[in-house]
Image (tube, rainbow, N blue to C red; front, side, top):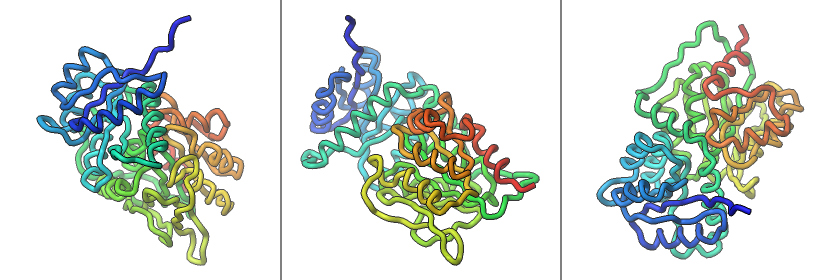
Length: 355
């Protein structure tokens, strides 16, 4: 009986301590192995040729060549799944979001020398992401990288013969690969689009930077959501990291509500919490979209929305970086239709157009 092929991981980090922590975590799992480590990108370049890893963990800040420059070169010459290891700071958030834009698979915070109680959760996160990365759609990551080279300033979409239906809202959920997938959808929508609520699995420091980036590149106005914002046409409300985003009905209409209750499906914000808040209102005038992402967060809730009478869309496997969440929804029959990412914005316009 042949032995199961292990996932080969190359760790690239200038800190010997970080290399050791990551090596110990990864080596403790039978389905993966650390085939090598490198203290800088020049050493990494040689080891990639020599060891042919399946997944790379890459430090953002290193001597001789920074992680972003190395990632650009890698995605141009030898595309492969890369997990960025970043500091959870505003500066770290900007760099990491840039890395995702140019083709990184996902990111993790730098492990601390004394993780204590957080070690189990950190180990679960990195091992899960390595497994998902090993099966990732590398062609999709490469497309993100190519798109990043050609992107300019704010997109302005002119939607001819488009007049949005009254009181309709759009709800979007995503995880791994979602920052770029959401951007592609939003950039395809005009400034008078119905209000959109978004839950993307993201840490607190990153959601602020992400909302700002989206606001600078989309026709709609994009906010990091706060509580009690009235849902208005032409506006996008992105769940802040470490808070669930829910929708409630008031005398003035639908408004946002944040809460910090326990994680759901290991996430806060959780797509399930946002979708279920809409179902609990009985708000059928919702188009719900579930995009690329690891795990199954939002899949069961999407089924409940479909059963309520909402129109539900899932991203297809071919255009997803990871077909986890939409795949789970597919197997539940939670979708009204399956769409490639490039068609989602156009379909949203068709569904919400009253003309």
